[in-house]
Image (cartoon, rainbow, N blue to C red):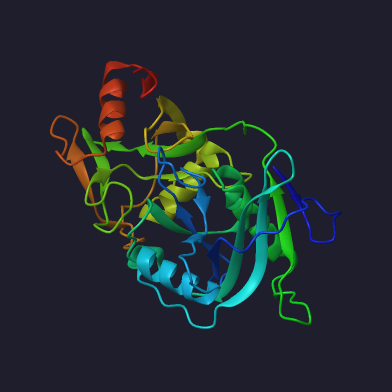
Amino acid sequence: MTTTSATDPPYSPHTLEVQGTAALLVDDGGRYLLHLRDANKPIWSPGSWGLLGGGAEPGETCDQCIARELREETGLTVPGLTPYVTVDTLDASGAIEDRVLVYRGTLNRPAHEIPLHEGIQLRWTHLGETAYMTMDPGTTAVLEEHRRHPQARLDSGGTPPTLRVRQEGPRRRGSIVGAHLVLVRDGAVLLGKRHPDSPFAPSTWHVPAGHREPGESALACMVRETSEETGIAIEASDLSLVHTVDQRNPWSPVPRLQLFFAASRWSGEPRVLEPDRCTEWRWWPLDALPGELVEYTRTALAAIARGTSYTDSGWTE
């Protein structure tokens, strides 16, 4: 993916009207509201994280388009939206495939409180986290522009600058890495019940887990996530890798490595520290696990009991 600015040489002889709009929504903590788009559908940038928005309808102004798209996708009405940048997506020859006007606005509302009517998930995201996400190239360009220029740079006529994005070829995708804690006491494993509004596995039991952040090892992630979610203190030196689930899901183009760690010792008792994600912690006997359990977690616990270190999931038809 190549991104150029409005000051680069001309790139296409023909002109094109704006075809759609998008919303760059930023909270007071500097995070961006990103939208995980449906995969395996004939839509723009399927399976990628992008901005809320969509194509304009006949006779519709850009202001009307962004207001309608936000209302249809999330029920949101965001006051004070202002044009921020135009994104032109170019084909291999340099011709414009798509032109989108991006509006900027401020929103401070937990993602789980926003009803989502289209797509998979909403997530407040720091810029550094996007390196580990499957991103729509145009969205990546907009976020980088906002990092450099937080305020809109409109010309004397009120027109925002243009970003030109070219997809140069297939992108090599990595894997999302998740760290999971298998904490066993007196034959029982610690499980948390996920919030009913959780985008993934609502009202389902799961071990303490999370995704590693940029520059963070899986062990460091496990220590941090355990502390943030449960208040339990563990040391990286007391963790050992007991199972890996190599996972390919039909709803995501990016595979996932789910690493399960066991702790030889720890301190503290589990507490609900993130009530918007987990509603309770409970010790479940390993021979009487709950019916509503994340499926790959059930698979991992069974494999650990057998002494198996690796499971692949979804790679064969």
